Length: 344
Image (tube, rainbow, N blue to C red; front, side):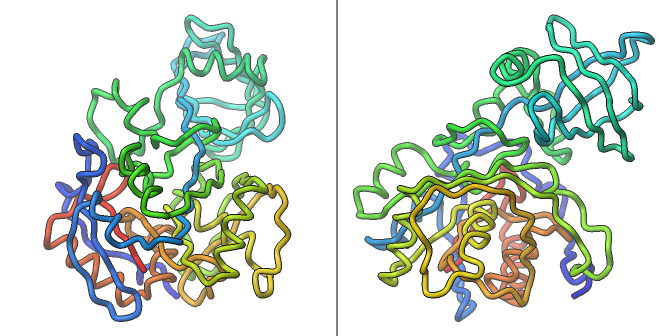
């Protein structure tokens, strides 16, 4: 398929700049992928579309303040580093402008220092003088929330709390798994009370997930790898649901990619219930045959993005084309802080 097949026109005023005041009061677009029928609700209504026995799979990765502002130690020129993923202890793949190999970067009010070891365009390999808990402690003090570039407001003081799911507990993501932002603790409590199981996976969302596709034939695009892990207990919940023909509903494209990575190549759910971890670069686009998920909760995604390609693969491209036109007409809010869609 061609890249332009996944393009659409979005009025700029529909790009959400703030989350809604109450997380679960965002709008919810309900789409039946088999019939193409849709309806409009609010996110707190999602409980009416979940059945006892369903397994809801969330990504519990926690966003850390990965945007670091510093200066070169020789020229004192200002630089910005965006942490993407840790290659090995103390060494990070980052995005950075106005820096070159060999630069030493200092950060005001911090013991942290960085040396640029390698550079390819804007991608850099940076070695820090701290690692582990010491490193993250300094980053927590001086770092800024790495909001997407389409959020253009200046006041970002609340984003450390708002750009985070209520169940996030494992530090490692440079961007939020935004489909989960709509859940509140109270709503999750109601969902559990209805007999719906919550399973957790962890995928540390890197910037590669959101990297623009630059090739005309989408099959030629390569996604950067991201680290995932799933506990034995959560694997048991998911595998048992598949064996018993109960629905597995992924919260977000990140949870989807973890589940499809694990279930790819498995036969009749013959997976062992062990702790699982690894790196995934799975790229899902129309034509892909899903092995695990039966439903998907997701936001409205950027034109020409791999995320739009994934939801098109699950729901059917024609259904998504129609749904997005309807959402634009009904003035849904798009992207990270925008409204949600439930596809079943």
